[in-house]
Image 1 (cartoon, each protein chain N blue to C red):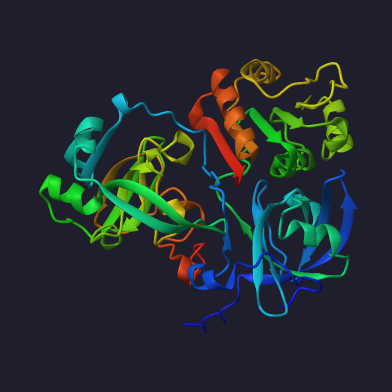
Image 2: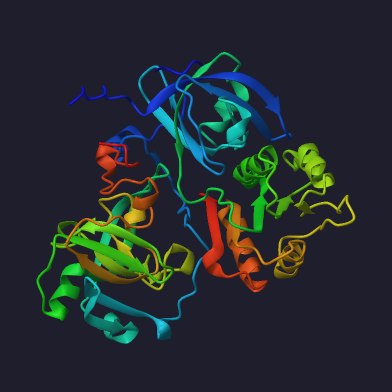
Length: 246
Length: 203
C-alpha cells in the first residue's frame, strides 16, 4: 500500500484579489484559494475569522461566480449592521488579506441541467442563483431559465446591469424583476411582493413546465415564495430552498 | 491563522462559554432552515409509524400518540449553520415511552427518522433512548408551528439540529447506519457539535 496522504485541514488560506461594490449594502469579494477547487453552481463556502486571542467566528456564504470563471471565487456579502462577520468585510478587509475558507460545500441547492428551471431570489438570495445563471451562459446551455428577483428598490438589484444584459440576449434566459418599494422600471417587471399570479406568469415565460425550482433568500421571503410557487401549481417536490436564518 | 483587523467579534458572555460548542455563536432568535417548502400537515392526517426495515411494528394516529405519557425537556440546541440557542423548552413523548407502548426493545443499533416531506436522517439507536430524545409536540407550551416542524418533530438535542427531523412521521430501525437526506449530501453521519462533526470529511 502506498503511504496515507498526510491529514490536511479542510480550512485553507485564500487571498482577497479584488473588491467591488455592487449596491449600497452589498460588496463582492474575490478569494483566490491557496488550493484551488472546482465548485458546482449553487454551492457555498464557510469563512472563518480568528481574533488574536483565538476567538473565531464562522459564517457560510454562497458563491456568486460560475465554476468556469477561474480559480478565484466571488462572494457577494451583504452588510448586516448587527452582524459579526459582514461588517468586518465591509469595513476592514482589503485586497491582499488572507482569509480562512473551507469548501466548496453543499449537495442539495446545486444546479442540475434537467429541463426548464425557475429561479426565485430575494435580495442577496440571488447570489447562488447568479452562479447558476452565469454557469448556463458560460457553457452556452440551451436550457430555458426564468429568474424572478425581488429587491426593495432599483438600486438594490444586485448584478443588475449584468442580468439585464443577459435578458437582452434572448437566448432562453428570462429576467423578471419585482421591486417591493418602488415602481417597476421595465415594462415586463413588477412592483409588489412575490405572489402566485406572478409565479404563474413567470412559469408561462418558460416553454414547458419547470423541472426544478430553486428559491433563496430570507426565511420570510422563501416561505412566501414557496407558497406562491405551490399556489401557481408548481409541485412541492421540485422546489429546493435555501434560507438565511432568522 | 489570525485574521488581520478582526478583534471584537460577538463574543458570548464568559459565563456561557462552556455551553457553546466550538465554532458556534449564541442566537436569541429561532432561525428556520429547510431543504424545501414547509409542508402543512393537518393533525387529522398525521400518523407516526415504528418500522423495522420496511415492516411496520406499530402505528399511532394523532389522538393515540397524544395519549402517550408526555415529558418535558429544556435543552440547548446547536445548528450546523453555527447558531446555538439556549434553554429551548419542549414537551412530547420520549422515544423510550414510544418503544414501551409498542412493547419492544430497540431491535437494531441504527435508526432512520422519516418525515412527511420525504426527509430522513440517521441516528444511532442508543442516541434516541435512555432519556436522550423525544418526539416533540409542544414548544414553549404551544403547538409547534409548521416552519419549526409541527405538528411533531424529533428532538435529539445533543446532536446538530438537522438530526432533529421536522414533520417527523416515523422511525425505521435499520441493520446498518444508512445515510439520510443531508448525510447523502455531504453532512456528517453522526453530527456531534462538541467534536464539530459538521461535514462528512470531519473526523
